[in-house]
Length: 272
Image 1: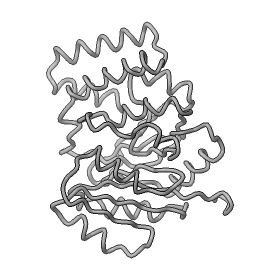
Image 2: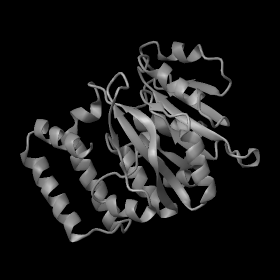
Image 3: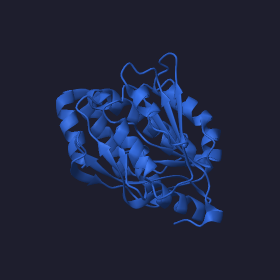
Image 4: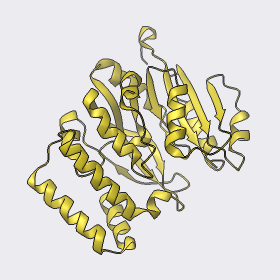
């Protein structure tokens, strides 16, 4: 355990929208963390199901529920939740995923050890809708290797991410103009304020749902990813090799000519 004199408050942000099927698993995985100095910010974006009623049943004082009167959309809802958070660190927790009990403790230990780190995540276990394990998704570990990778794919697990709040607030937060890949964009933008790091172990169980909006918008995802990668290289000076350029060009051509069903199969294959 982290020593009592090195026990900063962590805000765990859980944005919800019609999350009734999974929010109980998600909340309990955070309540059962070995690290206890938490505030759990549940910000509901005007759900039409029983999400809010389920959250209200929990009596743990660390849970702080906020309910929007009208739907704001993902970016505005996330940004509102961040401004409501008071922790030294902000941990992202999607409303349908599950965190291993050691997750927060491991991340705080890393962030407290190296003040240069502004964003860390780790591996994640890819699971089906019932959280049955399928495979583990790994990522580069060091800041140098993460920066090398970021021009070809997103090497940070956003659903398992922890951010240094003081530096996160300098970025302007999530871009409301991005309908998709808003996390990738923010990951690039925080680079100017410090270092990245990934913990080489699984921090969460990532639930793959059949109704996932990201999975349905594969072509749009590829176009926005391309834009962010060019921004990372030309505006934020991330290195790009000749091999990277060829890879990006081939993927751009594939985005234009291949049917989305085939693109989805290819993306799923390389994400394993």
